Image 1 (cartoon, helix red, strand yellow):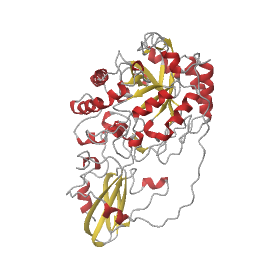
Image 2 (cartoon, rainbow, N blue to C red; image 1 turned 30 degrees about the horizontal axis):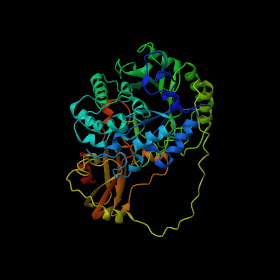
Image 3 (cartoon, rainbow, N blue to C red; image 1 turned 120 degrees about the vertical axis):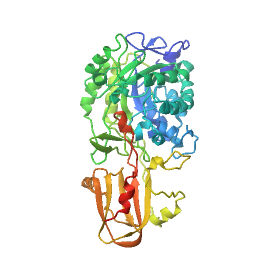
Image 4 (cartoon, one colour; image 1 turned 180 degrees about the horizontal axis):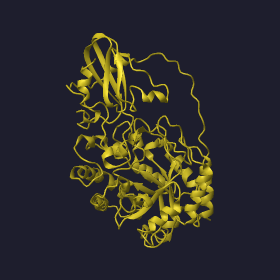
Length: 512
């Protein structure tokens, strides 16, 4: 009779964790191939965690991988939320409970605590209040590292107690994320992070991940285990890995099952047959694999990220990723491909749960709208109103315990006489969209189709202009929305403010 995964790897007591001292992985001195899938607890409502984890285990996976978003766990400087912080996202943030639940569902865990995570997540998981200080993030600079150290002092002890050799599920931790892609040679930064992890009690395997064929060992240290990120050509990437760590196991930390979506670009799909062939090639290499994503989930609120590739590209609210489990947790064809391949390849047969039933669909009765809340009523109810001679980006506003504003909308208001046939000009690019109202009436055109993004009010247009009606003693409102901060790229691309910058102050007064 098959035993559970934990029974197999812990019977007789635990004396060692995940080992890379040979050309294959061992866990507690027993051979193991890692069949892992990415699922981000902060993208899935807590009530669904067990269902998704059980479906992962039923597919034959033996591990779940997750990032940890600094910007949610420390939303204000020195204020933390690990599930009981009372923020809008508190119910998503019980990371300790998530990892214990993974263990209950007979899954090991791989944790990537950052401080930077990418993840198509706002600012790559970094808190926006870092922008208030004159620093470059993701460097060994004293200012940035002082914030990282304070955060890690709260986070890492939680994770340390959940390590495999301490009786928990975690078998490995990533040091930063894809640092080679920055093209920075700040090895001291990686060393400082590694030392912090050791200082705060992490004893399991420490690793990095990058594209070895593109970035070599730029983002790692010799003592750290290297893994590969890719969508295709696994043999090419694995051969590149062997140049830097001969005789060690081989692992794809991110085998991309699909891809994410940008607004106005449609939903990305990956051919299922091609996906299966590449996964089979990985497993037969042989190599371990973490499928990114196995269950994508949703970018709730304003937490989606963006890319800066020639122009700004914000990600959609959905993070379906065309993954084996869909955004709402249903099985896809990829799921059954994964289940069959692992079932045929895995030589360690442990007990698997039966396939959980699909989540039943529900419909909601019609609702009658009885009231509406108009814009001017909303503005009148706002408790925060700041007076300034110059416009200020949301991150620099003196609010939220001097942590600024992270997400949502900022209203810039002035009272002025608008001459007939006046033109309002916003210099540079909008960060990221703007609505123009005069005396609470919308003047700017609504967003109806993709081509409207090239017109006034959106990030694609530089130095946009709009005609305003002539009005004496008019209230002019500019409502600026943050559509997501960049989450990937070179270090200079991470210094990004949302809202209006100071140079706009003169333009707003100079209506012509």
